[in-house]
Length: 135
Length: 129
Image (cartoon, rainbow over all chains, first blue to last red):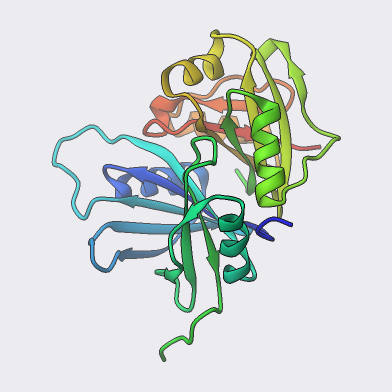
């Protein structure tokens, strides 16, 4: 049965200077950064690009440490599901701990983190069009 | 250089059978039997699980040697690599080298970008036929 994931929605690249890493990747690999924002609450600096159906998310602290060597790593990924309640229920029935679905930074979307049992892979589930979008 | 899509995400696991089984049983993913197997030259065995237009590649090291073996020894299991599909591997390598990036020579349609040129992210370029 499973979670019914349709695709990898986004892959998160964590960096101590997410703007610099996003810029390096965009310049060298020839894609466009489509969105930049600060995460509400934490102020984390996020930049987004899209390759095919997958979003690359570059995330890091609000401000990089001046002069620090830029270091990045593949942090985890997020799978798109059509029915969050079903997906979370399925995983919890299988013994997984998942966070309660909460609004994502993507308008109208909800997200739930899967905690453990994933062979060292941090990942989460996202469902779009789950919440009304404020105009 | 034209990127086509995320080809796959490489995930190092201690046991290929257990890793694939976890994701098959609990997450509902079905391995692609047409891909994967043992790759002695890389010191790995692998399996591919399609998720939309990309794959998850589960990789088990055959020993402690090589990048995958060293990753497993140092970090255990986890995300190892991001593979990007390009339309022309030779052109992609030439493009990146022209920008000053360190990239290995293409072999069987695959080239690895030095982590020194990616802020530490393990990137692979692949040209599918």
